[in-house]
Length: 402
Image (cartoon, rainbow, N blue to C red):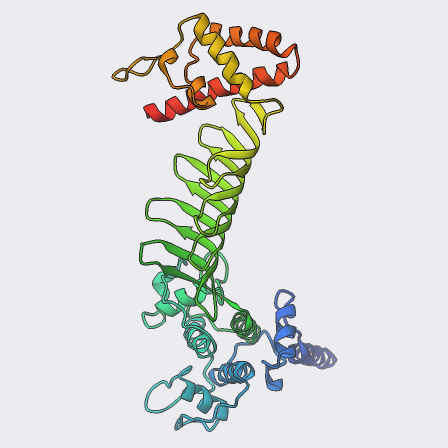
């Protein structure tokens, strides 16, 4: 008898302790911060500020939806949609907004527990009452097949809109029950996204570009994110109202990766770096064409020089003319292209002149002339420049031949 009494007492104590814990339980550690923020923002009715881990009912979720809408708009919802099985004013308000709907025969089933896919539908509709309408999207969960057809695009929309995620292992668990703490967190996310000046989304421009990122809530301008071009080019960063890259990365397939600040009118690189596919690096300040370096460094095959040059560039002209009159220097092209006698070229600039250098002996001759002409001053820099320019010729020629 004593054993039975002790056993009954222990069972009773355990049940009471369990009940007490459930009644006063705080949110899970991963949910605590956002639940507290939602309460501070006035989004959680007092009746829902407990038992956070238990499933939420349809009527309770309606109360959260109404609290959010009225908090953002600053106005009470005056309309009502009546149901046969409930007089809950929050259900009637949510029904009037079009956020929730009945289960048939003008009934709402207020005490039924809410599933995750039902929550996705309500959240997507709720977001549209306080912000933009979320674009219907294809969800990317491994259990997409289990999502009901009427909820499918809504699940994709709240996933893309960063409002709802999965339950782990890339599963959405559409028929799983939605808890109070999960409901409060997603209500907070809707609130946060609605009050921030930007909205996340994906859009397709008239020219076929796909814009994935954040748009200005008032103007609709694309502000920052990723732009995918039909030709394969990718841009990522901050954009102008005309969707020109202002700051960030520009990947031109099979050509180069550009990074830095871009001209808002032309979209060309102003300051930053260009990494070509062959390893050549331009870094510094660029001209209006976005490709010619004005000030900075150029590195080719490990050889780096500084722009502007540490000596007078006109020296090149004098030295090159001397070398070209000392011996015949030609620029030999690939088959089908002419052989150009460099002495017949119009030596207007260093680019044209350097194209006349073909043989290594010429380079050595120029180095000797540099020693004599410069008296040893800037000799190392001068040789580096010559080496770099020959390497650049090879690089450009290879690109041209391709």
